[in-house]
Amino acid sequence: MEMPTVEAALVTGGTGALGRAVVSRFLADGMAVAVTYFSEKEWRDLAAAEADASRSGKLQGFRADLTDEAAARGAVEAAVNSLGGLRVLAHLAGGYAGGVDLEQVDVKTVRQMIDTNLLTAMLAAKHVIPHAKRSGAGRLLFISSRGAIECYPGSGPYAAAKAGLLALAVTLSKELKESGVTANAVLPSVIDTAANRASMPKADHSTWVKPSEIAGLLSYLASRGAQSVSGALIPIYGRA
Image (cartoon, rainbow, N blue to C red; front, side, top):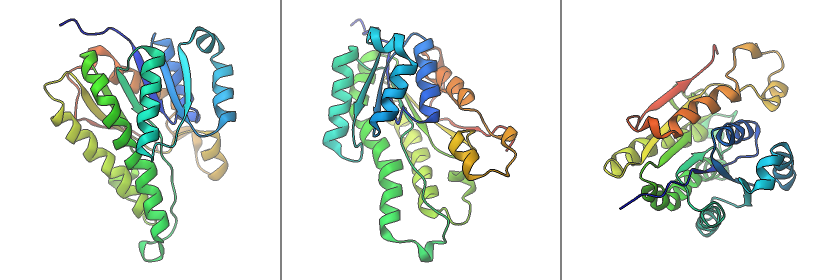
């Protein structure tokens, strides 16, 4: 049976600093892109920055709480209906809370870290996988963190959730081995964003990894030429 040739990606958390770089790169690669977002302003800013793609329908946005399965399913279905299919999932959605040792951590923070970083990935992947399989060359990409393996003090719930993404990528690579779908995780160090510069003004920002560098790596992993790369846990640390 001939496989669909739709070149389309869903980028979760696509309106942040990293998300904007990834969306821009995917569009430049010729893909149609759907993003999920929380902030209407961030979505409007992204759509304005990518005005040509927005006007042509190659960039679509859907507001969704990906910790809710019905919302995650709805976002995937909306993306498929809008773009004609999905071949790539780039899961960037997540968040950080930390700074205290585990004995002082409240359950709310633990659940927040697991839900925003790991549950969102599982639900997005669950509903993208059938479409990725139909493409014959599906790609599941997860943004984890250097902190998932180096596990800095005060970051227990975050590190555990991001480590879960590594296990998820490896598991999916094995579950989907015969389907043509690959699954990989990328582990950035500190990303050079305005927010990170503001929170760490005395750090040497020149050593941090650029969003465009991460976007370039994801571009390759999303390509049809990356069919032999699956189950990889790829560090991208800059000089940090």
